[in-house]
Length: 263
Ligand SMILES: C[S@@+](CC[C@H](N)C(=O)[O-])C[C@H]1O[C@@H](n2cnc3c(N)ncnc32)[C@H](O)[C@@H]1O
Image (cartoon, rainbow, N blue to C red):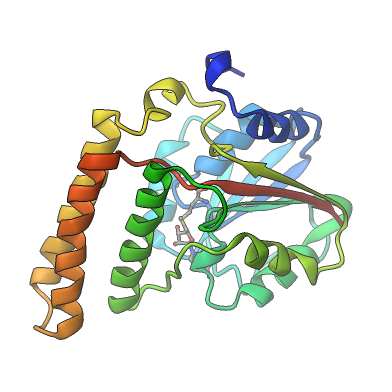
């Protein structure tokens, strides 16, 4: 695994990565896999593994994950996480990354993940949070995400604001997992094994700022096409303010929790 420069490493994120590197993944299920980012993180981070299955409700995301990982031996399936089409205790490891806040019935999804996990298997969650000690650039990232989530919700796509730290812990608490370890990370666990680590870790890096501003502009152009309303005018004003704020403070991913428990 390629390491970032030492002076840039957050010790807690490194501790989480070290813990992952001690886990034999076996058969791994990644729920709400999106473009498969977390599968790629785990492939580079876990001690070893037998196979990976990623599921996502969106046909578009499934297509993009399949394309991105066409060289890897990974199965990507279109499936709703509320009804996992697998036998009880089929997987050795189940995980969900940056997706708790996308779930309509989060308790059902968590129960399904628990059902398909073997006794003694690992349950891994990685999720950003909005409270606590965040830098100005991280606060900008959180505001941007809140705005983005509201626009998705307006368009009928389930997307909640970034959760608070305790909300993430509560969602796992009801499952009765044993030996839960919590890593409170300044950086994203996805960043450590990534080659672009040091460029991205600078909140003022022009590529990151350009991408965020472009995404806002894309959302703004979609808003132009929706019916006039007070909400629309407010969202347009907030989008313009956000672009200004990104130019001033830069932008960084919010802090995140990595939680690892056993069934
Ligand atoms: C932020 S993205 C995925 C992030 C990815 N896991 C990562 O770590 O980069 C959230 C994903 O949740 C998916 N999703 C939302 N509701 C879902 C559901 N009920 N079942 C499966 N996937 C769902 C969305 O289609 C989207 O791809």
